Image (cartoon, rainbow, N blue to C red; front, side):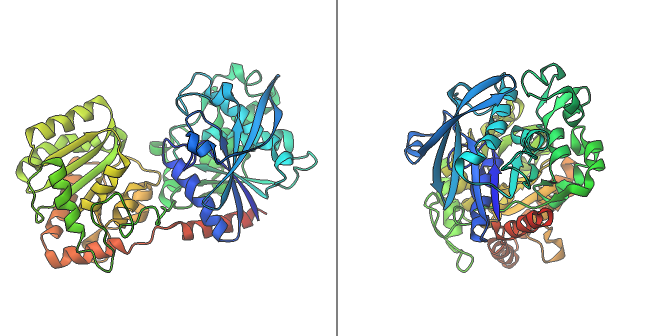
Length: 472
């Protein structure tokens, strides 16, 4: 089986969010399962010279963008045993950031047409084209309206994955033809609520639609989570399913991670506490291996549940015997809150604004507990990484958090959960987690259980292969 995996970002080349982690890991897992999966992405200006030096120029072609013909260079490289193709056009992609430009619609319309146009050139006709989020949602639309009957293109099936339904690619209808190159007869495919909605087009035209967790696939049928697309998804629910993301367990491994202070494993995690005392010393907090440490590594926005944290954490920190480590950036409101919290409780709270990958790993390794109170979370990777390093997640039961974390109150869980979006329910889960920490025998059981959780890509890859087979 041949799969062309279309992504607007992928590790190790370019990343801004979770899609890059998936595009950098899932294709390699599919390759291990005897599926020839190759990745195609834009050749961004942000890709390092080191990475560019590994690329080989194949050829160049001209790609139609409505009435224009635009240059398209094609490069190839290998990473983790996977072939990557890069679409080069400096006008569209030689910029300082991946997204957020006034012409993003045109940029990714070009990318989507290029994905299809290069298939005869690269000598790789896929059985499946697997697209991700709004940036490549036009690929199924273009395929069904322009390419499905062309010689050399027949029989290809398309899959469209929604990583976060909040970002849909919404534009005015007046550019339907001039930018996207679609005729009036195609308006119904991409029109929604008086606008062009690229994600809606992907949902309409793909053979299968997936999300990144089982629970999120159900949640986005509800108006609370769907950002308006629930009616479309309800009508197309027969093609919708959820497949849980995994993590790269070789990359995230407390046994071999060079970024953490001391290595450890599920068989012997006595060194884990040394990571805590080392982090305490680095941040200038009192060094005490017996005090519980709770980590937060996140974008500091209300979507991630920080309105709940803001409401109760000040009083909780004032009265609790614990330490809190926060790494992230986001809204001024929450950056200011944590700055004030750290200033008020310098012996209990450590804050670093921004994102420092090595420090994130140190916090995972040092933490006994890990807080993720998200309002919604399509999949979430941080809770799985926390488990990998033996930090017990405290999460709200939503999306992938619900699918990966079960409450320890039943004696079998791997973390602590709360259901309703309520600050005091969250606080109750934190207090139960602290109670478990002070039961030393139970804490060891839970830590080992967390370390032994398997959230690798192997299971997910098998589910994707079954999905692909079902439409071929």
